[in-house]
Each structure stands twice: as structure tokens, then as C-alpha cells.
Image (cartoon, rainbow, N blue to C red; front, side):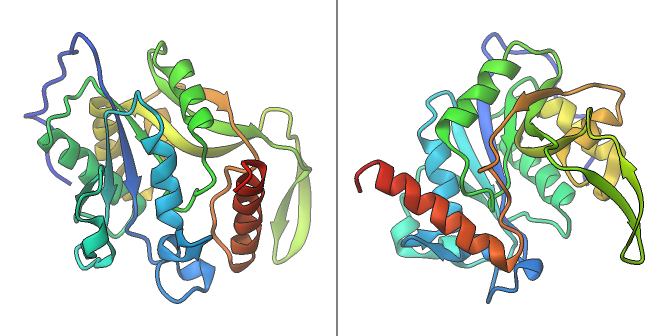
Length: 245
């Protein structure tokens, strides 16, 4: 990761909102042939459903997709005039990909005081309404925040496949994405936290800040395992049916 000494931290009059989609994962847990974000669902790759949702949110000024250096998916001719940006700077971890993507946004004209919404490419069921809900909650917040769900189930601790205890769930939330923070703050947080963090909020938390929890949707799950694909397809199909498609 690069140094942050040259990043200007002065706020702009009207901060812009950028979306950053880390898309450099290999999808090993999904058991699919190739990265899961490119698996086809209802006629188009999963990541394109994700990008379509952000394209419908007028307050998102630009979307950047972070891919690995050897990724060929976005090289296809039919994506040549796409409205989103591509940066082939994906790292070996999610944190590295996001950090590199934030640096790419600065190179595209973003400033440190702008907002960035980081979203998993494999959360293809995100809706424009949910993105707008996060924007409404965080644009007036000093820290930023994330979509999340209160934990609905009983939570067990385990060891060697056996229960070792039952944990209280009253204050537990399931973190989702997008996660929305100032670009400069998130760069600094990731620089300090390193590659071990698994989401942006945890890096911000490590700086002593408390991100805002914005209630999300159970449908905004991350397609991770093989069985998740069928559920995601069913939800997408139900939405199309509801629209009379």
C-alpha cells in the first residue's frame, strides 16, 4: 500500500458520491468454474446485476470496478462503452483491492472528502432503494455507515463441531454492503489496519470511530456457497415476475 502524505484532506463544497466494487475474488468457496461474480444469472453475469442497481441511483457520480491484473471479462467488445470505470489493480485481499481502488478514484478526480460506497460484487440483489436508504442516512453523518441486519437467529459458539455456549443476540448485527465512508478516512483506516480486516467498517472502528448501522434487507446476501446461487436466481426471478417481465 502507498503512503498517504500527498492526499489532500480539505473538504469540498459539495462532496461527490462514488461507488467502488471490488471484483478481484476467485470465488473458491462457491465451487463454480471461475470467479463467482461472472456466473450467469437470468441471462447476465452476477456483477452486471450489481452494477445495474448502482446505475439507477442518480446521486452516485461514478462507479469503479476493481479487477485483477489478468482479468479478461471487461475486455469484451460489448462492454467497451460501459458507463462505469475499470481499474486492474486488484490485490490479494479484499482490503488491498479496496485500498488500491480508492487510490484509483483519487487518480480519476475524486478528493479525500468525497464519499465512497464499497459494495461486494457478489451481493447482486442490492436494490437502488437500499442504496438510497444508505445515502439518506450517511450523507448527514460525521462518520458514515453500512447496511446491516439485526441478528435474527440464536447465536452459538463452537469448538470441534460442538456447541460451547449460547451468545446473546440483542446487540448483534450482520454486516452487509454498501459501506459508506469518506475516501480519505477510509484510506487512512485501511493503511493503519492492514490486510487483515474483512470489511471497511472494521477498519474505521479500529480508529476509534463508530459507523452508523442502517437497517438493510435479508435479500441483500452475499452469494458465497453453491446453494446461494439458486436462492439468488429465485429472488431475481420473483422481481422480474413482479414487474411483469
